[in-house]
Length: 213
Image (cartoon, rainbow, N blue to C red):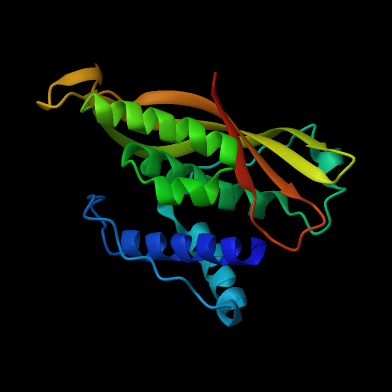
């Protein structure tokens, strides 16, 4: 089951990366078709994700700061901080977009059960009130690992602080603005926590918590 989820996650990331490469102006067309990849393509797709994440212009200004959590991270075999931060920056973008677009399927793939239920409840409440959300991540100015812990059972928790520039608005059924400003770019500081079992061969870190400063 874990391997299947890994492949689904990778398939989603690849599909969205390819989709965005063909939309230079940043428009938001209909949701692209997602193709689940076979296990034999895992290594090729993983390398592709790494390459395209490095090339993504939206994240060119990211500062990879040192963290006091580095000593804990040394206990995770094969852990590369820069690689981890580049990949979770892509998850940051995907989750923000999926939440704004009420895309529960993507959210379910990237989050644990408890957080998904919170996101889902907010989405359902907005749908009941005919409220629409629009979110545009301009760029991530800075991110760093702010905390890291490993439980006796081998569950690693890594807290990542993101400082980003975003435009977020809410509109009612008539399209009237009820929250936010379409012409105002907010500078937002978030702390997101990612978890995985360090004994697992899976590269996937599930998002388990989001907090705004």
